[in-house]
Amino acid sequence: MQTLASLGGASRGMLLVRDTAPDSQWRQLADWPTSFPTTRITQAFQASLIQLADTTVQQGQSILPLDSPVPRGPGQFAAAVRLQLTSGPHCVAALLFSEVTESSLHETLLRLRLAVDVPLSFQDHQSAQKARDDASSFASALDVMVMVNEEKRFLAAALAFCNAAASRFQCDRISLGWFEGGYIKLRAMSRTEKFNRQMAAAQLLETAMDEALDQDDEILWPPPKDSTLVTRDHEAFAQDQSVACLLSLPIRLDGKIVAVLTCERAEPAFKEAEIQQLRLCCDQAARRLTDLKTTDRWFGARLAAAFKEKAATWLGPKNTWAKVGAIAGCIVLAALFLIRPVYRAEGNFILRSDEGAFLTAPFDGFIDQVDVRPGDKVEAGQRLLSLATRDLELEESAANADLNRYLREAEKARASRSLAEMRISESLADQARARLELVKYRLNQSAIKAPFKGVVVEGDLRERLAAPVKQGDALMRVAKAELLYVEAEIPEREIHEILGRDTGEIAFVSQPKHKFPIKILKVEPAAFPRAEGNVFLVRCAFINPPEDWWRPGMSGVCKLTVERRSLFWIFTHRTVDFLRLKLWW
Image (cartoon, rainbow, N blue to C red; front, side, top):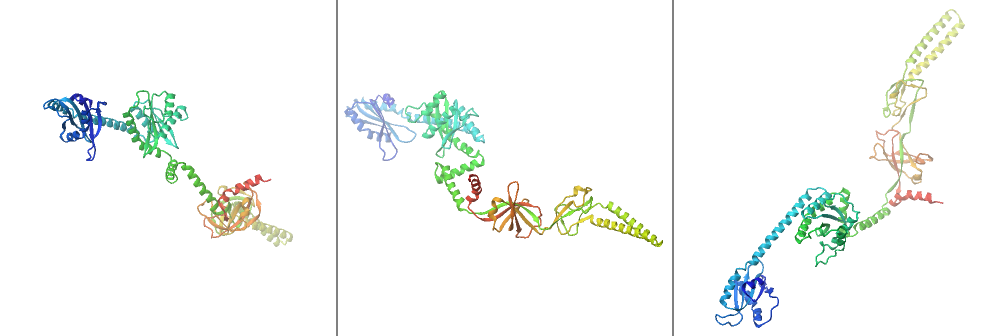
């Protein structure tokens, strides 16, 4: 305004603006000089401003005499020109001229018209400068994001973000702290792959980041003169680390702070344009870093974070885990006392047969042939194994020869009427005949056969071929597969629970997915010692017909049904019994 007034030789100037709306009013934007004595002329100038401005908007310029001038003589005039703007409100420069003629005033207005496009040029320059600043900001953000997007892990992306920003803005160090558990935790530092969060410097830095988090605003150190933000922690960190310039920027995602970026450098101080560029970089990187932070964890952590986020919408964002824990505790307590499943006494079992036979060696000899192995089904009378008969066959031949010789001698003595010799020969013949019968009996017994239809449960003699055996040695055991029963071993601490009970289930070690119902027949009255403690033998029968693959000697787990009990009793009764025994006096 001063420049226009000086250019035209005016004694006073005012800058008026009005919005383009029809009902808008003119308002004063600038006045030169700031102090001016009040006279009749100045009052007339002040009163003519509205009329002068309206005329100028329509005609581009206007002249209004403020007194009755002498024709072609000097006088007091108010003149105005419209200043050119790109868009927006109307702008008029009103000037007060004293002791000038109207013809010279027209010449002055011509000179002033040459300067009416100065505001337009200034706006164009500002727009161009802003465009350059915006382009620089976008270029900075793109350069930083290129480095961040190349990484697939959160810590690597955070380090790349800090390194790229530090290089772009000539910072000595840039640190990134992530909001976790209500506090900022330092996660990355430029040009530093490993650091210790327990160091005093790291803790001071986290405290400074928390200061920016608590105030939800950017904190600059040294603070501007008109700043009202608290910078005590930033001051403490700057003094401890001898940092001249410090800037902390909250990183927001969907309106919530997820991290804080702290920049350090010696000189110069951070400018507003740099702060805007850093803010743009933070806004662009927020989504990528948050996604990596969410996905770059093991499945359990991701599931817990998703559950907490969902629970926070129901229970509130504060103390979410405490609320979830309290609700879960109530549910668990209710389940422990209200849910009453069937309690079953557990023990081991073995499958036994009511009828079985041990097959022993009928005489001293050697194993010649083995026809079956344990697990094979056999029919009654089927040969299982045989003993060597070569020696017996030789004995049989010798016995036959002796028998024939003694019979001939007896006949010879009878023919010679020698009664005594005949009696002796007949006795020797009877002795040879008895020995022959014994040998034939042993030959018949050399083939050991199954006494009944069943299954071979013991005695794998395939590796004992030609091995010697003694008379009475147990060689094999055969049992009937149709008459199987369960022999369960129930621990002593559970025996009182099954007295008077009827049913249960078993599961074989070989087929644990299949369960078979049983019924209790009787409980042995005496306990048997075992390595893990005393047990009682419980005889049980199958409710359904036996399966084809069952064999005597199979084992597994047996569970005998007791009654419905609460979960609390099921989980604690053994501990309670133990404490009762230990604390009893």
